[in-house]
Length: 255
Image 1 (cartoon, rainbow, N blue to C red):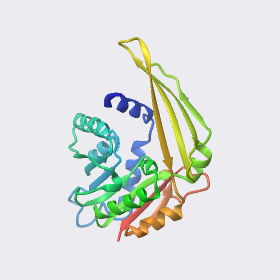
Image 2: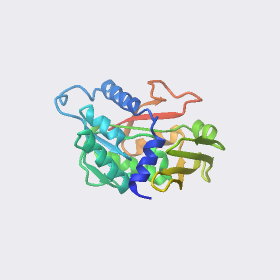
Image 3: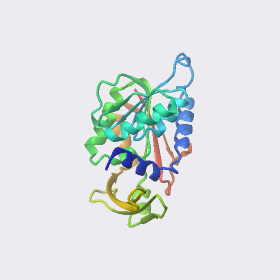
Image 4: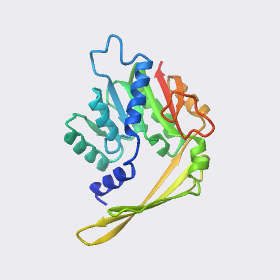
C-alpha cells in the first residue's frame, strides 16, 4: 500500500476528529499557566508535536503562530505531512523518530502527544522512556500535554463493538476486541477503497493495538521523569475526569 493510500485512509477515518478542539484546549492551558505571556511573549513558542501523523495538528499550530516541529515513526506519514504543510504555506521541519527514543531535536517550550497516540505504545517501558525523552527535550518549566483513552473507554466503550461506514469512495468495518494485557484493546479494520480506474474496490486490512493505564500510573511515571503534574482534565474541558469520561488530558511541567 502506498503512502498516498494510507494517508487517504487515515485522513478519511479522522475526517471528523475535533482537531480545532485540541488547538483550543492547548492554547487555553498555555494561557492558564503563563506560557503565552511574560518575557518570551514576543517570540513564538516552540512546540514539539510527537506522533504527528499526516500533520493536521502541526499545520494548525503553525497557523496559530507557533514554531512547530513534527515527529512520527512512519516515513510515509511524514511525506504526506510535509506535502500538506507546503500546501498550507507553513514551514514545519519533520523528523522520523520513535518517541520512546528521541534524540538531537533541541529544546522546546511545549511538547504534545495528541489523538491518543501514546496509547499505541505496547509496553510500560516504552511509556516510561517516552516521558524521559520528552523531559530531555523541554526547557525548564516547559509544558508537556498529552491525552489518552480512559479506562472506561477501553474497557467498556470499545470492547466487543463493531463500527461501520458505507460510502462510495471508501467503506470500512471496524471490530474491537479485548487485548491480552490489562486495559488494552485490539482493532481489526477492513477498508474497501474504490479504484476508479479498475472499476472495483480494493480491500485493505489494518490491525491496531492500544493500551492505557490508570491515572496513578501515569502520574508516577511523570514524576519519575522529572515532571510536576499540574492538572488532569477530561474530554477537552477544564474539568476533572468523571466515571464516564472517554479522553483524559494530562498537563505536566518540567521541574
